[in-house]
Length: 505
Image (cartoon, rainbow, N blue to C red; front, side, top):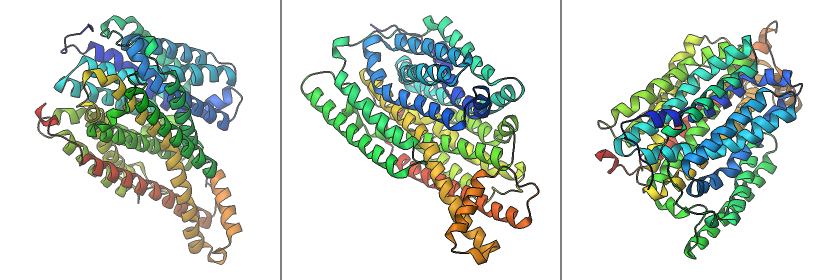
């Protein structure tokens, strides 16, 4: 039998949540440290971005295999293996003297570690707690991610600006050490299957499909045609994977992933909500950092300070949401969050200008973060609520795969929308300030090329400044409206959640 703990003990949650904290922390640390990593390792931004993509690809490729390995190796053992590998990867990255060494540590080893840890984090929590305690525990994972979102830009900005990017990553080793020291506090879920049950063919097919899909997403802003082809092939391969898994199960063999779980309505809806949420959160951080650092010329620390209205609201409302369970159900709370965030997006769609003050951005950023906080806290519980204990591992793998895909898609999709907004802004700006060049495609291209390379507008004449202001406003407004539409889709999905059982807890 599986070792169980007193559900009133939060120690297992604290230990496991540390992993969730450092995984979010790590990606945000990279965002604020990238220019310093480029300089220290004598490379370029494109190379580092490629290493970030490889990290995502490796994690995505192995995540379904990792989900099944929980049944064969055991949740705790697999989680601890992942934690140890994460520590090795980070230590290697910290000690890197070359891009190759950094790739081995941060992209490869840590990419594998992420795949091992992510599904185990959710399944350990859902297996340790039940009922209202599980709702609170899963919400806490969201809160911990909110804490990382809040403090990473500030902490990473301070350490990177005044010390070294290496110390930001070294900071994560403290949490790995804590996890390994406290490992006996995690319940021991014994394996339920043997290694002979491992579906090698399914693992290969799923890995190929996920790599093609994520690769297509990551290259969306560089070569749209190629990326669409890659995504189509990825979806075809994943469809073959689903067919193969159904066939394998019907023949009496153990599938890599029980795709029949998708019949559970809340799992489908919850996973879709988490996927869309991750698109929003990664896309939002991308555009905020871009605006603060490229347009307003803020350093990493000041960027973290400027982001506080968004991140603090996200944290506060992710803490507040679980306390409302009982008075309001999951469906109503997530729907309220969607509406609040939509209002925030609409306000922000008019706010991003060259002369904007931080005070002008606070209302919109606060509302945007507040609404996301509700989704952050409750999305996982919705997805896993009706899943039986024996299927929790598979369900956590489905949920984690959705989250990984969403995180991968966010920056790429928002990047495309940003580019389209820039192009639309150029047309408006030229018509307003240089009407003689309206319809001149070469002039439009020159403005576009100049805008991409623009570092500062200091000393430029009023025509250039006004043109840039319109372009920036158009681009950011396009992004905010797109985010509002995604929130609208989440709202529609939320209203379809089956909540009659949730009300009882």
